[in-house]
Image: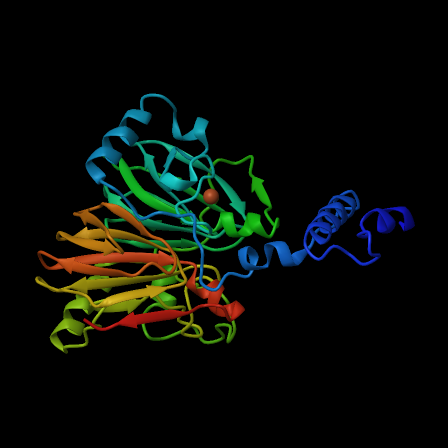
Length: 361
Ligand SMILES: [Fe+2]
């Protein structure tokens, strides 16, 4: 220590104001690196950024492409062999990371007639948004939810679930899971069961009848951090959008939009993920909007574009697109259009870090 200090002193006895201080700092950084330490002041602006920094890029997956490739995968592997026959929608800037955004996984799952995707459970919460087919089911905690296009199905943290398709057509849906966020916390667990299918212990559709009808079973819990409804059907949700439009309840950025809610407390359906369904009337020109939750959208009806900063994403039925966090975007509808969307907003709100920003015009 004494020797190093001596050699870094100038001939007049004091430190050389520029040359020596740089050399002293570098020598110090090298020494502390060997002790697994580093100077915060060198990286401060990279780790405490003035605004959100994202590696994600805006992107659209067109359903025509996606469907033909998913159908092709049906000839390569069975649902049972794959556990889940899913093609991952990878953000082009995050190849190999199984992510659509930094916190959300997205994939297209297919189950062919007669197939079963075996029962398992995991800490990651999942949602399904049905794209194609009719009459396949997701069984969650002993209840079968039969699915139709536009249905929004949730599988909460640790809920056992399996999928089956007794219909005569393939069924395809969008899966979104929060496992990138769970894995960030390094908190993942999963169980794979010996029995392929769960025993049915509740009537089909019981959860919607009991909890999504404006009443609750007497004795229902007063606190539950995830919705007890398994399937929010399109048949029930879609007409509400027309009523909102008729009542002129149209947000300038988002259109006539509902939020899927937990009927126990009015909160999000899951603590980690929240979803919306919005009607954009023909000719809708949305005001620019941004928020800190990167968002995955699905078009269920109509056609239009979403401009994300200077990139224009064109969408039509069953196309999936992603808007990164804190990028300004606006929707434009060429026809009456319906967009489903899902993000990690509830997780950010619970942590007190969610922000939004609107620009008029
Ligand atoms: Fe699963």
